[in-house]
Structure formats: C-alpha cells, structure tokens
Amino acid sequence: MALNSGKLAGKTAYISGASRGIGKAIALKLAKDGANVVIAAKTTTAHPKLPGTIYTAAKEIEEAGGKCLPCVVDIREESQVLKSVDEAVSTFGGIDILVNNASAISLTGTLETPMKKYDLMNSINARGTYLCSQACLPYLKQGKNPQILNIAPPLNMKPIWFKNHTAYTMAKYGMSMCVLGMAEEFKSDGIAVNALWPKTAIATAAVEMLGGEQMMNASRKPEIMSDAAYVILTKNSRSYTGNFAIDEDVLREVGVNDLTPYDWVPGAELVPDYFVEGAEEFFMQQGGELKKSMKGQKSSGGSSSAGGVDDLFASITGLLNEEMTSKVGAVYRFVLSGDQPGNWVLDIKNGPGSVTKDAPDDIDSSCTMIMDSNDFTKMFKGELNSMQAFMSGKLKIKGDMAQALKLEKLMKTVQNKSKL
Image (cartoon, rainbow, N blue to C red; front, top):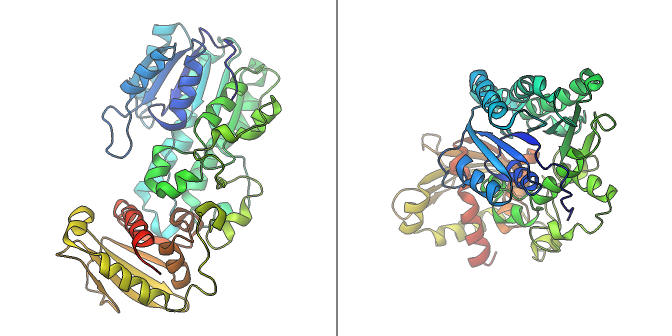
C-alpha cells in the first residue's frame, strides 16, 4: 500500500460525506500525515445498518494523527455549506484541499424514479459538488498546492451506463463535468481539479446493505481509493489537473503493483464498477452474472429453467415459519416472464408465511420484483448476484426498496438449506 510521505502535514482538507466509507478512508489517510480535516456530513446519529457519525469519524481522525473539525452539513443547503467553510477557515486558517465525496444513489429506471429521488441525487451529487467547490474556491486560491478531487467517474457516453438508471448517471456525471469545466477555468490559478473512480466495487457499509455479503466479497477495501487519492493530492497542482483517474492505475504508476492486499477477501474475483472502460460486457451478460470461481459453487448444468420456479417456491415454502415472518415482515410479489411466466406472492409477514401461485392483483405487497424466470432461479440458487441483476436492469423493483433488500438473507437460507 502507498506510504504516507508527510507532504500534507498542516494542510487543511474539507471532505464532504466523510463520516463513513471512502470519504472517511481518505480523511484517515490525510490524518496520518498530520493534516487538518473538516468533515462536512449530516450523520450525527448512527444508522442501524450504516454505522458511523461525524463524531466517531472525528475521533478516529484525531487518533490517526490529524486535527478534525466535524460540521453538521447537508450539502443541499447553501447556508450550511457556507457556515462550515467559514468555521474551517476560522479554525485552521484556510483550505488547501476539497474532496467532493458525498453522493446519493438510486439505480432505478425512469418510470421507477420518483422526482423526489431525482431531486435528491442531483441536489447532492451535481449541485452539492458545484456548491462546495464554489464555497471553497476563494480560499483554495490562497492555499498551498490547492486541490479539488471529485469522487466521480470518467465521462463515458455509452448507452449501457444510462439505460437502466438515467437519473443516477446524469447526477453522477454532473460531478464529472465539474472536473471538466473547473480544471480549465482555474488552471491559471494553479488549482488542480481531478476525478478519481474505483476500477472495482468498494466494500463499504452501503454496498453491504445493497448487495449483501456476496457483493462485499467481490469488492476491494476503501483504502485503495484513499491511497490513490493521497497520490493525486500530493502531485503538483499546476501540472496535474483535468484528469479522470482510476484508482489502480494511479497506484501502479507509483510502483504499487501488488493490489491483492486491497481485496476484501484475498484472492476473490472482483466485480468491476460502473462507468469503467471495459466493464460493459460484464454488465450486459446475464445481468452481471458472477463467475462460478467467485462463488465457489458448481454450475447446476443445463438450463436453470427446468422445473426451476415451482421447485424453488416449494423449497421456500418449507423454510417459512413464524420466526422468519416476525423478522422480515414483508410481502413480495414476483412477476416472472420467459420460459416459466407467472405471478407469485411470497408472504413473509403474516402467520407462518405462505406462497401463492397465480396470485390475484388484490393481494397487497411491500414490493414487486420483475424479471425473467431463468434469472430468478439463478438468483435464488446463488448463480446470479442480486445486486448486479438489479444494477444491470435484469431485476426491476417497484415499491419499498428497503424491504426488497431483506430478501438477501432468505436467498442465503435457500442456498444453504435447500437441495435445488
């Protein structure tokens, strides 16, 4: 892993969304140099599934050797951003580095994306990045080797990156366009503006919540992003600007050729991230089906459709009980197409639970999942990663997304206890 050089000692970095994940990893990396870190995030109380607050992160930063100013900031609110920037300058005397890390995500299609969610993503991703940059720029102009780093993807205009989640891509590319424009706009001021994006999925609490253990096992640790960010932030701001960098490329350029220490699970096959050149094939094939070597499971051989859906629901029925319904508390509708079309309702909310085939429309459900019957059986057997199926558009979800995420545990139970 890239070693700290001490170049950022005494520098002040303003980092949005640094209470957890990649933002916190970057903050800790800078703190090891003795940097001052301003955490601009709104998390003051830990989420049950997303641990970490601005205060717990601040404690870790100071224990790592830096100074920290935790600021309660919703970057959608201009007054809160401006206040936090003023506090940062008053506390540390200026701002040398801005890391635009805060981001919102909803991998939903046009008809499944309510305007409230559209506004959230664009307000945080594109507008929030623009606002934080605008607020910090007067001080960056006075900083030493001033840097803006956006955690944003390269601008890749291939339809695959738009078709299943146009709103999210627009919002995320808004951060990228800030790099494109501001790098040129502030080049004469010596302010570097660059983007950094991961080559693979990164193991954060958010990824675990969305994709479960299987997705975590196919990811790298956040430290690969923080190490790459450190390399960029210590470059000469006048000579390195306007770049859309990929984490592993940055590290290889400075001699870090063994990237296996960054694997969440040593030796596991990794899932590529969105927007990365060369990843299109992965996201187009079978909804991003994970290779057998990553799962450590043997292929069932032949078509997954043969007797698949009926047998699968029979197995699920045998696993239902009152303990499970008390924990899950949700009703799922599956609308399947393909070789074995059907409309099924899986009740894991009432009594001991139940499965209804050819379910009438008047049965209320927490969420509806729409997909091909072959992909459905593969997903429950562990041959198709549910998050990748969703991300690629093979699985469409309508209704309560939080309830949909609870199915991951049931799928694991089916895989462990059922002989499919």
